[in-house]
Amino acid sequence: RQMCIRDRWPVRPYYKRELAEAYAPTISPASALNRLSKWMKLNLELDEALRHTGYKGSQKIFTSLQVELIFRYLGKP
Image (cartoon, rainbow, N blue to C red):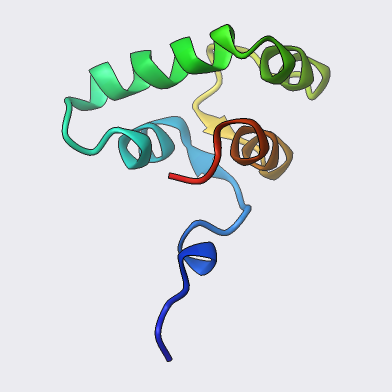
């Protein structure tokens, strides 16, 4: 069956780098991580919602709940 766009990015844990590269595939992984981090901080509602999940900037993996919030506020990659 043909993969639907919705199926391409299911809500599940993702490494930060994996998700960052999905949002910015044409730039370096480090730049993609910086960009995603900036988008998350600039979106005040997302930033607050992530903090309520216990999100820390130093974590390497987003939880499923954090991914769900990122998709809700930023859209899917």
